[in-house]
Structures are given as structure tokens and as C-alpha cells.
Length: 319
Ligand SMILES: C[C@H](OP(=O)(O)O)C(=O)O
Ligand SMILES: [Mg+2]
Image (cartoon, rainbow, N blue to C red):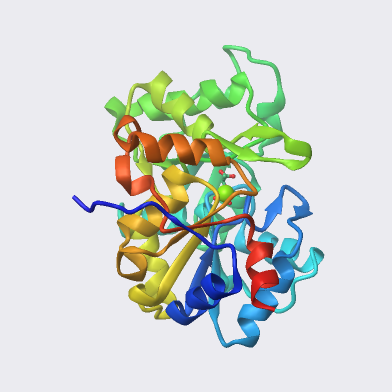
């Protein structure tokens, strides 16, 4: 077991320059690091432009499956980012489709039942799969036991569950039919395990992990988590861009997803995780973890290597 030291607080220029010296590649979480829903976190754009001017490489890794890579490109553009191409963006709707191919060997043209927003549907279509369920308007109707979508389509080969703002009884009930079908044998892919995510105005909002876990509970079956902290997800990202693991830093706001992802993935030779305090984790959460890590599932793997006030602070310290 790795014994982790307390995190280094990045609070002056020397600390910030040491980070720059140590890492060539930066993986940025999105909710709570880059933005709070539609609001950019102050200073983030400047920091990323600065890193880019120093020849640093970066990618965005989000457990939020509500948007496809294409839709995230548009979001980055609308927030003032320039030149963010889709190969730099790794949302879990994309990871879920990769799992269909690489883990379950499900062939294109297969139907896949979705409980989630359009991101999953768009990524599925792109790889030739046929999404069913998802944003189908018929699922907006009140529950009725004779509803046509409660009858299982035997051609459905897998179920993907992720973030959605359209969580209603028809969607839960129809998804359950697929999870129970054929003795619970249809693959069940969960886009993430996040309980909540930080929204604007200090709001904490339910995240996709709560949807996935609702289905896990009612169907009484396990799911494959394709999002952070999955090592398969990380290895795929590093391989896509040829990033050297030992020179890569994960920047995130959530201990049990982002920080664990960087730590379990041995980024930066075991010290490749940076926590920002602009999202779901507050200083008191960190103090509690440090005083008794074994009280937490994941224990010391949740302890970040570094902490900084915000990603914007990094740019301020450097410039
Ligand atoms: C919280 C998470 O998004 P991320 O922080 O990974 O961008 C999610 O929305 O489920
Ligand atoms: Mg986050």
C-alpha cells in the first residue's frame, strides 16, 4: 500500500513553477474545475492559454455524459476557448461506447437502451449503434403499465446509464425491464459514480452516479463504471495522445473520482494529482480525509499530491 504524504499547497510562484517543470501533460476535469454548469471559473482560460504557450499538452476528462464530444467542442467555443478539438475531450458517453466495442464486443447496428441525455445517443450513432429509450419523447408521459416502451425489445444488446435531467418513473421502469431481462444478462454500463456536481450560485446538483446507482439498487445488479477512476479510461486517454504517465498531472475537484484516478493510475510517478477547491470538495472535507483516511472508501488513494485554490490561481502565480 502506498503511504501518501499530506498534499503540497500550491500558493506561491516557486510551487507553481515546480509543477510546470515536473509535468508536460495536464488532464483537466470539467465540472468544478473549468466551469460551474454554463459559467466559466475565473482565470481558467488564461491559465490554459499560458500552459499552451509553454508547449504543455492537455485534455479534458469529464464524468458528465450529458454531452457528446461534438457538443463539448461547441460549449468550449461558446465560453471563449479557441482551437479545442474533439480529440482533446473525453466524456464518459464516449467511454461507454468504447466499452461496448472493446469490453463487450457488441457489433454496430445493435440497439442499445439508454437512460441518459443526448450525449450518449450521439456517441452511439457515431459508431453505428442504434440508441433506444434516452430522449424518446414517449418516455416523458406519466407512467402507465400498458405503455408501449415497457415491452422489452429483444434486439437490445446493452444498457447505458448516465447523467440526465429527465429522470422520471417511465424511464426508470422501462430501463429496469432491460436490466432484468434474460436473467440480468444484458451488459449494464454506468457512465459514472458521481453523487453530485457543483452548479452555479453554490448549488450542489444530483449527478449521473446517482442515476446509475438508482438502477443498480432497483435491479439488484452491478454495473461497469467506465468513468473516473477507471484505469481503463485513463490508459485509453494516455495511449491516444502518447502522454508519458510519469509526466502527466490530473487536475480535479472530486476526491473519489479525479484524485483517485490520478493516484491509482500512477500519474507523475505517484504524485500526479492536483485538487482544486472551486468545486465539490471544500477545505474541511480535505482536513477530515487527512485526519482519518481509513474512514473513507478508497482510503489514502483519495489524498491529492497537491492542492490549489483554483485552476485560475495557477495562471496568476505563473504570470
Ligand atoms: C461531476 C461530474 O463531472 P466532472 O466533474 O467529471 O466534469 C458529473 O457531472 O458527473
Ligand atoms: Mg468535477
